[in-house]
Length: 151
Image (cartoon, rainbow, N blue to C red; front, side):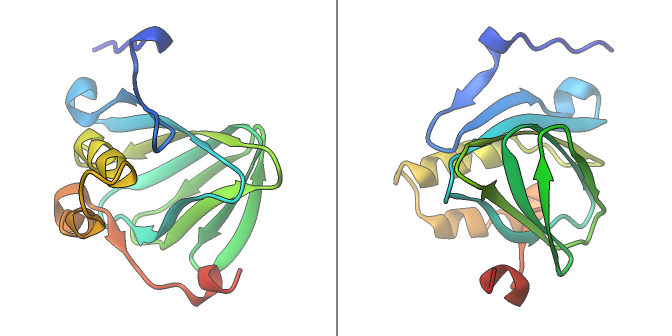
């Protein structure tokens, strides 16, 4: 199966800065992928983990601060990071420039519904408690991290 998503055809979620590329149903169950742009000073995702999915980060431009386990690292343009399942992680733009990142999740559940729900929460069209209720559905489990809180 070949999947081609042209930039002009990709669904863009402007409030969250997410561009949806390919989801699990599109890739015959193999992966889901999206591109995100994080503005300086704006958290990309709070600490969370995926019980089933591994997550790959590839920084297209800018810098990204990432929590992985209990370590904080900074990724720069061209850097690649693999986060194993059951590893707490969080991320945000680092520095004064936006960070553009390609994400790929393998062994993932379909996730585009999650990103659309986040978009509605960012726009104030749904409550954040609705996002929290979808942990098992989208394999996105929020966790506490003193390291992230004290960054």
